[in-house]
Image (cartoon, rainbow, N blue to C red; front, side, top):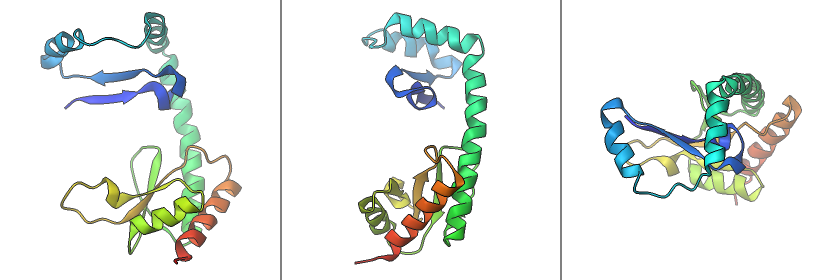
Amino acid sequence: MIYAGTFSKSLFPAIRTGWIVVPAPHVAAFRQQAALLPCTVPGLIQLTLADFISQGHFWRHLKNMRQHYARRREWLETALKKQGFAVVGQLGGIQLVMAVEGDDREMAARANQAGLAVQALSAWQLTGENRRGLIASFTNITSAQKAEQLAEKLRRAIQNAP
């Protein structure tokens, strides 16, 4: 299995630097292919990031952010449940999923029209499963009150079908 990601969400967007974890047996082949491509990340950025990671600063940053995000997730999950949404339990991530009955794409479109950044779960499925739900991020939730306002706005947007 190969893992890939970016530091844009875990640190800050302007860094525009990604990472990839390749199984040991494939490292040589990966390095050979990567050497053929231009690197768009300046060396100074790469070295600074390497020092940041090796000195443990990145790990401390992630640990701190996990605590913040856990609180923000709790705020939004509680507010959504008060509004009657069925929040699906997850082990991690920066989004939560609400199970819904009906056309989740239409619900997401109504939420988007109301100014909410919600996505339909069915839009992310390739084949087989027919799960319906809404996906919402909680990283920008700044208080329990804000979460309650957004949850109520989501409920109103979904219930106000044309």
